[in-house]
Image (tube, rainbow, N blue to C red):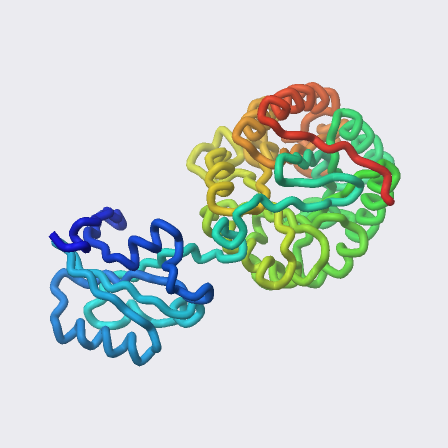
Length: 388
């Protein structure tokens, strides 16, 4: 038995079993990158078709060498693999699957680079202003109405949620609604109200931005940008926010995978803004009893893959006030870096998403439980401080 046959990890992909590896791949799996592989280089595996010919194999070698890649062959019992090392950008764009005899190409390293644990092992911690931080054991507890409807009612709700313990105020000035006839938000007037209330209560504020053309305007008033589920893959917007100085709260799309979410975060990071906070807010499912399906496993899953903070929004995930408390507590227990809950003093008169809002007294009672659970989990909930 040679060294290749002595190390036979099994890969499962579309029902195929890929058996047989070689030393360079073993080192990659054990330490993420071969010792002789420069930081800007990565490795991929080419899986050959079962019926490949030697002529095709030699052609593949010639093509790889012409592209400037190094390669190593492993003939396993059942399949033949080629390890390819080269510069990341070149490998990502190389048409390897188009070469005759190639069945599949698998990347060893994650496609999201800046968001990955390989890039940064320790948890990211971001300063949101007013003494509030998120990440590294500090929880951001966002609360407020879905939409900004007026300064008086916003102040009433904000005062109540801050008294309960919330440390970030939310409110939408631009609302992406399914119907063009629904309330679309107050625009800049709403932003002014949000900023005024945030300053009065010493709370950082977060609000949604929907279009690259709104970024400059929203930037004048907010402490955090929010990207809603519908815009998670609005790449022009992501790139624009990557050039701003405020943290970005990125919500998972309704049909997005975890990798999709992290790749969207990568757009922001790659454009210069290193402060991205992820948000699990449920995905679409066949079950109509809740608004969405809350993927709680997303929290530890993301935390294993990325250094970025991740919070949970049980309001949009469930759409039901009777389910929000248990899901909020589950989020804290799962290790989330915060909880995002919609609160309204009179949901029946709310101009947006009233049925999924908690009343202030319900939020206060829930917050007591979340605070106790956070202590058990070794987390802290920072309290706001006056601006310096």
